[in-house]
Length: 470
Image (cartoon, one colour):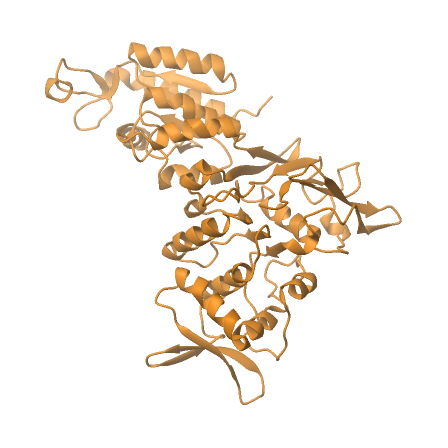
Protein backbone atom coordinates (compact mmCIF):
# COMPACT_ATOMS: atom_id res chain seq x y z
CA UNK A 1 0.00 0.00 0.00
CA UNK A 2 1.10 3.58 -0.67
CA UNK A 3 0.47 6.84 1.14
CA UNK A 4 -3.12 7.33 2.32
CA UNK A 5 -5.09 9.99 4.16
CA UNK A 6 -5.01 9.32 7.89
CA UNK A 7 -7.48 12.10 8.71
CA UNK A 8 -8.83 15.43 7.54
CA UNK A 9 -9.66 18.43 9.75
CA UNK A 10 -12.32 21.06 9.02
CA UNK A 11 -12.94 24.44 10.62
CA UNK A 12 -15.16 27.34 9.55
CA UNK A 13 -17.17 25.55 6.83
CA UNK A 14 -20.96 25.77 7.23
CA UNK A 15 -21.80 24.08 10.58
CA UNK A 16 -18.17 23.52 11.57
CA UNK A 17 -17.90 26.29 14.16
CA UNK A 18 -15.00 24.42 15.81
CA UNK A 19 -12.15 22.38 14.38
CA UNK A 20 -13.15 18.75 13.93
CA UNK A 21 -10.99 15.86 12.80
CA UNK A 22 -12.40 12.99 10.75
CA UNK A 23 -10.28 9.80 10.75
CA UNK A 24 -10.35 7.69 7.60
CA UNK A 25 -10.05 3.94 7.27
CA UNK A 26 -6.72 2.86 5.79
CA UNK A 27 -6.82 0.12 3.11
CA UNK A 28 -5.30 -3.12 4.36
CA UNK A 29 -5.96 -5.57 1.52
CA UNK A 30 -9.18 -6.82 3.14
CA UNK A 31 -12.67 -6.34 1.73
CA UNK A 32 -14.07 -3.18 3.30
CA UNK A 33 -10.74 -2.30 4.92
CA UNK A 34 -10.54 1.20 3.40
CA UNK A 35 -14.22 2.06 3.81
CA UNK A 36 -15.31 5.07 5.89
CA UNK A 37 -19.07 5.36 6.49
CA UNK A 38 -20.53 8.68 7.63
CA UNK A 39 -23.92 8.25 9.33
CA UNK A 40 -26.26 10.42 11.35
CA UNK A 41 -29.56 12.33 11.08
CA UNK A 42 -30.51 14.80 8.36
CA UNK A 43 -28.79 18.20 8.63
CA UNK A 44 -26.09 16.66 10.79
CA UNK A 45 -23.18 17.74 8.59
CA UNK A 46 -22.39 14.71 6.44
CA UNK A 47 -22.80 16.54 3.13
CA UNK A 48 -20.63 19.38 4.43
CA UNK A 49 -17.81 16.86 4.87
CA UNK A 50 -18.15 15.73 1.24
CA UNK A 51 -18.09 19.40 0.23
CA UNK A 52 -14.83 19.82 2.17
CA UNK A 53 -13.37 16.82 0.33
CA UNK A 54 -14.33 18.49 -2.94
CA UNK A 55 -12.33 21.57 -1.94
CA UNK A 56 -9.38 19.35 -1.02
CA UNK A 57 -9.54 17.80 -4.51
CA UNK A 58 -8.83 21.15 -6.21
CA UNK A 59 -5.62 23.10 -6.61
CA UNK A 60 -7.42 26.47 -6.35
CA UNK A 61 -10.80 26.05 -4.62
CA UNK A 62 -12.98 28.88 -3.36
CA UNK A 63 -15.79 29.07 -0.81
CA UNK A 64 -18.41 31.80 -1.00
CA UNK A 65 -19.56 33.75 2.05
CA UNK A 66 -22.69 31.56 2.34
CA UNK A 67 -20.54 28.47 2.87
CA UNK A 68 -18.44 29.89 5.70
CA UNK A 69 -19.44 29.62 9.36
CA UNK A 70 -20.21 33.05 10.80
CA UNK A 71 -19.86 31.87 14.44
CA UNK A 72 -16.32 30.53 14.12
CA UNK A 73 -13.66 33.02 15.21
CA UNK A 74 -11.12 31.15 13.07
CA UNK A 75 -10.68 31.53 9.31
CA UNK A 76 -11.71 28.75 6.96
CA UNK A 77 -9.12 26.01 7.33
CA UNK A 78 -8.71 22.40 6.22
CA UNK A 79 -5.85 19.99 6.72
CA UNK A 80 -4.87 16.54 5.50
CA UNK A 81 -2.60 14.30 7.55
CA UNK A 82 -1.24 11.35 5.63
CA UNK A 83 -0.31 7.88 6.84
CA UNK A 84 3.33 9.02 7.18
CA UNK A 85 2.34 11.78 9.63
CA UNK A 86 2.90 14.61 7.12
CA UNK A 87 0.34 17.44 7.07
CA UNK A 88 -0.73 19.94 4.42
CA UNK A 89 -3.11 22.85 4.93
CA UNK A 90 -5.74 24.68 2.92
CA UNK A 91 -6.37 28.10 4.51
CA UNK A 92 -8.34 31.27 3.84
CA UNK A 93 -6.52 34.10 2.13
CA UNK A 94 -6.74 36.97 4.70
CA UNK A 95 -7.04 39.51 1.86
CA UNK A 96 -9.69 37.58 -0.11
CA UNK A 97 -11.71 35.42 2.28
CA UNK A 98 -13.54 33.38 -0.36
CA UNK A 99 -10.19 32.16 -1.69
CA UNK A 100 -8.16 29.47 0.07
CA UNK A 101 -4.49 28.68 -0.47
CA UNK A 102 -2.48 25.50 -0.04
CA UNK A 103 0.52 25.13 2.23
CA UNK A 104 2.75 22.10 1.55
CA UNK A 105 0.59 21.21 -1.45
CA UNK A 106 3.13 18.62 -2.64
CA UNK A 107 2.58 16.40 0.41
CA UNK A 108 1.03 13.10 -0.71
CA UNK A 109 -1.64 12.19 -1.55
CA UNK A 110 -2.02 14.85 -4.24
CA UNK A 111 -5.37 16.59 -4.73
CA UNK A 112 -6.03 14.74 -7.98
CA UNK A 113 -6.23 11.47 -6.03
CA UNK A 114 -9.54 12.65 -4.52
CA UNK A 115 -12.71 12.11 -6.62
CA UNK A 116 -15.94 13.48 -5.11
CA UNK A 117 -19.47 12.62 -6.28
CA UNK A 118 -22.37 14.82 -5.10
CA UNK A 119 -25.74 13.31 -4.18
CA UNK A 120 -27.38 14.67 -7.32
CA UNK A 121 -25.92 12.41 -10.01
CA UNK A 122 -27.95 13.20 -13.12
CA UNK A 123 -26.84 14.94 -16.29
CA UNK A 124 -28.39 16.57 -19.34
CA UNK A 125 -29.69 13.70 -21.51
CA UNK A 126 -28.59 15.51 -24.68
CA UNK A 127 -25.03 16.73 -25.05
CA UNK A 128 -22.17 17.67 -27.37
CA UNK A 129 -19.11 15.63 -28.22
CA UNK A 130 -16.10 16.12 -25.95
CA UNK A 131 -13.59 14.10 -23.94
CA UNK A 132 -12.03 14.50 -20.49
CA UNK A 133 -9.73 12.09 -18.71
CA UNK A 134 -10.05 11.43 -14.99
CA UNK A 135 -7.75 14.25 -13.84
CA UNK A 136 -9.26 16.82 -16.20
CA UNK A 137 -12.75 15.86 -15.10
CA UNK A 138 -11.89 16.19 -11.38
CA UNK A 139 -10.41 19.65 -11.94
CA UNK A 140 -13.36 20.91 -13.98
CA UNK A 141 -16.15 19.45 -11.86
CA UNK A 142 -17.54 21.82 -9.26
CA UNK A 143 -19.65 21.19 -6.17
CA UNK A 144 -22.78 23.27 -6.60
CA UNK A 145 -24.51 24.77 -3.57
CA UNK A 146 -27.76 23.89 -5.34
CA UNK A 147 -28.62 20.27 -4.60
CA UNK A 148 -30.80 19.96 -7.73
CA UNK A 149 -28.10 21.05 -10.19
CA UNK A 150 -27.12 18.55 -12.88
CA UNK A 151 -23.54 17.37 -13.38
CA UNK A 152 -21.84 19.71 -15.82
CA UNK A 153 -19.31 17.59 -17.67
CA UNK A 154 -20.22 13.94 -17.17
CA UNK A 155 -20.95 13.44 -20.86
CA UNK A 156 -17.20 13.91 -21.48
CA UNK A 157 -16.57 10.77 -19.45
CA UNK A 158 -19.24 8.83 -21.34
CA UNK A 159 -17.58 9.65 -24.66
CA UNK A 160 -14.21 8.51 -23.33
CA UNK A 161 -15.71 5.22 -22.15
CA UNK A 162 -17.70 4.48 -25.31
CA UNK A 163 -14.94 5.25 -27.81
CA UNK A 164 -12.06 3.44 -26.12
CA UNK A 165 -12.53 -0.33 -26.35
CA UNK A 166 -10.54 -1.12 -23.22
CA UNK A 167 -12.36 1.56 -21.20
CA UNK A 168 -15.73 0.32 -22.48
CA UNK A 169 -14.99 -3.27 -21.47
CA UNK A 170 -13.61 -2.32 -18.04
CA UNK A 171 -16.54 -0.01 -17.34
CA UNK A 172 -19.10 -2.65 -18.28
CA UNK A 173 -17.30 -5.28 -16.23
CA UNK A 174 -17.91 -3.20 -13.09
CA UNK A 175 -21.40 -2.14 -14.20
CA UNK A 176 -22.46 -5.80 -14.59
CA UNK A 177 -21.65 -6.47 -10.93
CA UNK A 178 -24.49 -4.08 -10.04
CA UNK A 179 -26.88 -4.33 -13.00
CA UNK A 180 -27.27 -7.94 -14.07
CA UNK A 181 -28.37 -8.76 -16.72
CA UNK A 182 -26.54 -5.78 -18.19
CA UNK A 183 -28.51 -3.67 -20.63
CA UNK A 184 -26.66 -2.97 -23.87
CA UNK A 185 -25.89 0.73 -24.29
CA UNK A 186 -24.18 3.03 -26.75
CA UNK A 187 -24.03 6.67 -27.83
CA UNK A 188 -26.25 7.82 -30.70
CA UNK A 189 -27.00 11.16 -32.34
CA UNK A 190 -30.40 12.82 -32.67
CA UNK A 191 -31.74 14.53 -35.76
CA UNK A 192 -30.82 17.87 -34.18
CA UNK A 193 -27.17 16.89 -33.96
CA UNK A 194 -27.14 16.29 -30.18
CA UNK A 195 -25.82 13.09 -28.70
CA UNK A 196 -27.54 10.82 -26.18
CA UNK A 197 -27.12 7.44 -24.48
CA UNK A 198 -29.22 4.72 -26.11
CA UNK A 199 -30.26 1.81 -23.86
CA UNK A 200 -31.23 -1.11 -26.09
CA UNK A 201 -33.92 -3.61 -25.10
CA UNK A 202 -35.51 -6.59 -26.83
CA UNK A 203 -38.50 -4.61 -28.09
CA UNK A 204 -36.93 -1.19 -28.56
CA UNK A 205 -34.76 1.31 -26.72
CA UNK A 206 -34.77 4.16 -24.21
CA UNK A 207 -32.65 7.25 -24.53
CA UNK A 208 -30.96 8.91 -21.57
CA UNK A 209 -33.98 11.18 -21.16
CA UNK A 210 -36.28 8.21 -20.51
CA UNK A 211 -34.13 6.09 -18.20
CA UNK A 212 -34.50 6.18 -14.40
CA UNK A 213 -32.29 8.40 -12.24
CA UNK A 214 -31.05 5.33 -10.36
CA UNK A 215 -29.43 3.87 -13.49
CA UNK A 216 -27.83 7.22 -14.34
CA UNK A 217 -26.53 7.45 -10.77
CA UNK A 218 -24.93 4.00 -11.07
CA UNK A 219 -23.24 5.08 -14.32
CA UNK A 220 -21.66 8.04 -12.50
CA UNK A 221 -20.51 5.92 -9.54
CA UNK A 222 -19.06 3.17 -11.75
CA UNK A 223 -17.21 5.83 -13.75
CA UNK A 224 -15.48 6.95 -10.52
CA UNK A 225 -14.43 3.36 -9.83
CA UNK A 226 -13.50 1.63 -13.07
CA UNK A 227 -10.37 3.67 -13.95
CA UNK A 228 -9.33 4.49 -10.39
CA UNK A 229 -5.90 3.49 -9.11
CA UNK A 230 -4.57 2.02 -5.91
CA UNK A 231 -4.65 4.56 -3.06
CA UNK A 232 -7.19 6.82 -4.78
CA UNK A 233 -9.83 8.45 -2.56
CA UNK A 234 -13.45 8.24 -3.77
CA UNK A 235 -16.09 10.18 -1.83
CA UNK A 236 -19.78 9.54 -2.55
CA UNK A 237 -22.61 11.56 -1.03
CA UNK A 238 -25.75 9.45 -0.53
CA UNK A 239 -24.98 6.53 -2.89
CA UNK A 240 -28.43 5.11 -2.17
CA UNK A 241 -30.44 7.86 -3.88
CA UNK A 242 -32.97 6.53 -6.43
CA UNK A 243 -31.66 2.96 -5.99
CA UNK A 244 -33.81 -0.07 -5.20
CA UNK A 245 -32.60 -1.91 -2.06
CA UNK A 246 -31.38 -4.83 -4.20
CA UNK A 247 -29.14 -2.44 -6.16
CA UNK A 248 -27.95 -0.79 -2.95
CA UNK A 249 -26.79 -4.16 -1.64
CA UNK A 250 -24.94 -4.97 -4.86
CA UNK A 251 -23.34 -1.53 -4.95
CA UNK A 252 -22.21 -1.91 -1.34
CA UNK A 253 -20.40 -5.14 -2.22
CA UNK A 254 -18.63 -3.46 -5.13
CA UNK A 255 -17.54 -0.50 -2.99
CA UNK A 256 -16.29 -2.83 -0.25
CA UNK A 257 -14.28 -4.77 -2.86
CA UNK A 258 -12.65 -1.60 -4.20
CA UNK A 259 -11.81 -0.44 -0.68
CA UNK A 260 -9.25 -3.23 -0.32
CA UNK A 261 -6.64 -0.85 -1.78
CA UNK A 262 -8.53 2.44 -2.13
CA UNK A 263 -10.13 4.80 0.37
CA UNK A 264 -13.90 4.96 -0.14
CA UNK A 265 -15.86 7.51 1.91
CA UNK A 266 -19.66 7.22 1.97
CA UNK A 267 -22.15 9.68 3.42
CA UNK A 268 -25.35 7.68 3.74
CA UNK A 269 -28.82 7.38 5.23
CA UNK A 270 -29.20 3.74 4.19
CA UNK A 271 -28.66 0.75 6.52
CA UNK A 272 -27.73 -1.31 3.45
CA UNK A 273 -24.33 0.42 3.34
CA UNK A 274 -23.42 -0.64 6.88
CA UNK A 275 -21.65 -3.98 6.61
CA UNK A 276 -20.42 -5.49 9.88
CA UNK A 277 -17.97 -7.74 8.04
CA UNK A 278 -16.33 -4.65 6.57
CA UNK A 279 -16.17 -3.00 10.00
CA UNK A 280 -14.56 -6.16 11.37
CA UNK A 281 -12.00 -5.84 8.52
CA UNK A 282 -11.09 -2.25 9.41
CA UNK A 283 -13.85 -0.05 8.00
CA UNK A 284 -14.75 2.99 10.10
CA UNK A 285 -18.25 4.13 10.99
CA UNK A 286 -18.51 7.78 12.04
CA UNK A 287 -21.64 9.44 13.38
CA UNK A 288 -21.95 13.09 12.37
CA UNK A 289 -24.39 15.28 14.33
CA UNK A 290 -25.15 18.96 14.71
CA UNK A 291 -25.21 20.01 18.36
CA UNK A 292 -26.69 23.26 19.65
CA UNK A 293 -23.59 24.39 21.56
CA UNK A 294 -20.84 22.65 19.58
CA UNK A 295 -21.90 22.89 15.95
CA UNK A 296 -21.10 19.82 13.88
CA UNK A 297 -19.51 17.11 16.00
CA UNK A 298 -17.79 13.87 15.03
CA UNK A 299 -18.16 10.52 16.84
CA UNK A 300 -16.03 7.71 15.33
CA UNK A 301 -16.72 4.18 16.55
CA UNK A 302 -13.50 3.36 18.40
CA UNK A 303 -11.52 0.27 17.50
CA UNK A 304 -11.84 -1.26 20.98
CA UNK A 305 -15.65 -1.16 20.61
CA UNK A 306 -15.42 -3.36 17.50
CA UNK A 307 -14.63 -6.29 19.81
CA UNK A 308 -18.08 -5.83 21.37
CA UNK A 309 -19.61 -5.90 17.92
CA UNK A 310 -17.80 -9.15 17.07
CA UNK A 311 -19.23 -10.72 20.23
CA UNK A 312 -22.75 -9.74 19.20
CA UNK A 313 -22.29 -10.90 15.61
CA UNK A 314 -21.23 -14.35 16.77
CA UNK A 315 -24.32 -14.87 18.97
CA UNK A 316 -26.07 -17.66 17.05
CA UNK A 317 -29.06 -17.59 19.38
CA UNK A 318 -29.76 -13.93 18.57
CA UNK A 319 -28.71 -13.35 14.95
CA UNK A 320 -30.97 -10.30 14.61
CA UNK A 321 -29.25 -8.18 17.28
CA UNK A 322 -27.32 -6.21 14.65
CA UNK A 323 -29.72 -6.86 11.78
CA UNK A 324 -31.28 -4.39 9.37
CA UNK A 325 -33.69 -2.95 11.96
CA UNK A 326 -30.87 -2.22 14.42
CA UNK A 327 -28.79 -0.49 11.73
CA UNK A 328 -31.53 2.12 11.43
CA UNK A 329 -30.42 3.42 14.82
CA UNK A 330 -27.43 5.14 13.21
CA UNK A 331 -29.70 7.57 11.37
CA UNK A 332 -31.78 8.66 14.39
CA UNK A 333 -31.05 11.92 16.19
CA UNK A 334 -31.34 10.44 19.70
CA UNK A 335 -33.85 9.02 22.23
CA UNK A 336 -33.17 5.28 22.02
CA UNK A 337 -35.06 2.61 23.99
CA UNK A 338 -33.17 -0.60 24.73
CA UNK A 339 -35.12 -3.72 25.75
CA UNK A 340 -34.00 -7.31 26.20
CA UNK A 341 -35.64 -9.17 23.31
CA UNK A 342 -38.04 -9.18 20.40
CA UNK A 343 -41.07 -10.08 22.49
CA UNK A 344 -40.30 -7.08 24.70
CA UNK A 345 -40.42 -4.80 21.66
CA UNK A 346 -43.72 -6.34 20.62
CA UNK A 347 -45.40 -6.14 24.02
CA UNK A 348 -44.12 -2.68 24.96
CA UNK A 349 -45.45 -1.29 21.69
CA UNK A 350 -48.81 -2.96 22.40
CA UNK A 351 -48.88 -1.56 25.95
CA UNK A 352 -48.12 1.95 24.70
CA UNK A 353 -50.92 1.65 22.16
CA UNK A 354 -53.40 0.23 24.66
CA UNK A 355 -52.62 2.97 27.19
CA UNK A 356 -52.67 5.65 24.47
CA UNK A 357 -49.14 6.77 25.41
CA UNK A 358 -46.82 8.35 22.88
CA UNK A 359 -43.08 8.22 23.55
CA UNK A 360 -40.72 10.44 21.56
CA UNK A 361 -38.20 7.62 21.15
CA UNK A 362 -37.32 4.59 19.05
CA UNK A 363 -36.75 0.98 20.07
CA UNK A 364 -33.37 -0.49 19.18
CA UNK A 365 -34.06 -3.10 16.50
CA UNK A 366 -35.72 -6.21 17.92
CA UNK A 367 -34.03 -6.01 21.29
CA UNK A 368 -30.43 -6.35 22.44
CA UNK A 369 -30.50 -10.14 22.75
CA UNK A 370 -30.80 -10.51 26.52
CA UNK A 371 -29.94 -8.51 29.61
CA UNK A 372 -26.22 -9.33 29.37
CA UNK A 373 -26.09 -7.75 25.89
CA UNK A 374 -27.41 -4.38 27.03
CA UNK A 375 -23.98 -3.25 28.21
CA UNK A 376 -22.14 -3.65 24.86
CA UNK A 377 -25.06 -1.99 23.01
CA UNK A 378 -25.04 0.92 25.47
CA UNK A 379 -21.27 1.14 25.01
CA UNK A 380 -21.66 1.40 21.22
CA UNK A 381 -24.35 4.10 21.48
CA UNK A 382 -22.33 6.07 24.02
CA UNK A 383 -19.26 5.87 21.80
CA UNK A 384 -21.26 7.21 18.85
CA UNK A 385 -22.41 10.25 20.85
CA UNK A 386 -26.02 9.36 21.68
CA UNK A 387 -27.06 11.52 24.66
CA UNK A 388 -30.51 10.11 25.52
CA UNK A 389 -30.71 6.33 25.94
CA UNK A 390 -32.96 4.31 28.25
CA UNK A 391 -33.01 0.60 29.01
CA UNK A 392 -35.90 -1.50 30.36
CA UNK A 393 -34.86 -4.78 31.94
CA UNK A 394 -36.74 -7.63 33.59
CA UNK A 395 -37.08 -7.69 37.36
CA UNK A 396 -35.00 -10.79 38.10
CA UNK A 397 -31.83 -10.62 40.20
CA UNK A 398 -29.45 -10.77 37.22
CA UNK A 399 -31.23 -7.96 35.39
CA UNK A 400 -31.33 -5.80 38.52
CA UNK A 401 -27.59 -6.27 38.98
CA UNK A 402 -26.97 -5.29 35.34
CA UNK A 403 -29.24 -2.25 35.70
CA UNK A 404 -27.29 -1.05 38.73
CA UNK A 405 -23.99 -1.50 36.89
CA UNK A 406 -25.23 0.37 33.81
CA UNK A 407 -26.66 3.20 35.93
CA UNK A 408 -23.25 3.64 37.53
CA UNK A 409 -21.33 3.33 34.28
CA UNK A 410 -23.51 5.56 32.06
CA UNK A 411 -24.68 8.37 34.29
CA UNK A 412 -26.42 10.27 31.46
CA UNK A 413 -28.56 7.25 30.56
CA UNK A 414 -31.58 5.88 32.46
CA UNK A 415 -32.35 2.24 33.25
CA UNK A 416 -35.57 0.75 34.62
CA UNK A 417 -36.54 -2.71 35.91
CA UNK A 418 -39.95 -4.34 35.74
CA UNK A 419 -41.83 -5.22 38.93
CA UNK A 420 -41.95 -8.83 37.63
CA UNK A 421 -39.26 -11.26 36.53
CA UNK A 422 -40.32 -11.16 32.87
CA UNK A 423 -42.44 -9.20 30.40
CA UNK A 424 -45.14 -11.91 30.18
CA UNK A 425 -46.45 -14.93 32.01
CA UNK A 426 -44.50 -18.09 31.24
CA UNK A 427 -45.77 -21.57 32.05
CA UNK A 428 -43.71 -24.45 33.38
CA UNK A 429 -43.50 -26.12 29.99
CA UNK A 430 -41.74 -23.05 28.54
CA UNK A 431 -39.00 -22.82 31.16
CA UNK A 432 -38.95 -26.44 32.43
CA UNK A 433 -38.72 -25.50 36.12
CA UNK A 434 -41.42 -23.18 37.39
CA UNK A 435 -43.93 -20.62 36.31
CA UNK A 436 -42.88 -16.99 35.93
CA UNK A 437 -45.25 -14.07 36.27
CA UNK A 438 -45.05 -11.16 33.83
CA UNK A 439 -46.69 -7.76 33.57
CA UNK A 440 -48.85 -8.98 30.66
CA UNK A 441 -51.02 -12.05 30.51
CA UNK A 442 -50.94 -14.81 27.89
CA UNK A 443 -52.98 -12.61 25.54
CA UNK A 444 -50.49 -9.76 25.81
CA UNK A 445 -52.74 -7.51 27.88
CA UNK A 446 -51.24 -5.43 30.69
CA UNK A 447 -52.40 -6.61 34.08
CA UNK A 448 -54.26 -4.06 36.17
CA UNK A 449 -52.00 -4.76 39.16
CA UNK A 450 -48.97 -3.43 37.25
CA UNK A 451 -50.60 -0.60 35.32
CA UNK A 452 -49.48 2.10 37.77
CA UNK A 453 -45.90 0.81 37.82
CA UNK A 454 -45.66 0.63 34.02
CA UNK A 455 -47.16 4.12 33.68
CA UNK A 456 -44.48 5.36 36.06
CA UNK A 457 -41.74 3.81 33.89
CA UNK A 458 -43.02 5.31 30.65
CA UNK A 459 -43.72 8.69 32.23
CA UNK A 460 -40.13 8.65 33.50
CA UNK A 461 -38.86 7.82 30.03
CA UNK A 462 -40.86 10.59 28.37
CA UNK A 463 -39.76 13.13 30.97
CA UNK A 464 -36.14 12.12 30.46
CA UNK A 465 -36.40 12.35 26.65
CA UNK A 466 -38.03 15.78 26.70
CA UNK A 467 -35.82 17.26 29.42
CA UNK A 468 -33.23 19.58 27.90
CA UNK A 469 -29.63 18.51 28.55
CA UNK A 470 -27.89 20.48 31.27
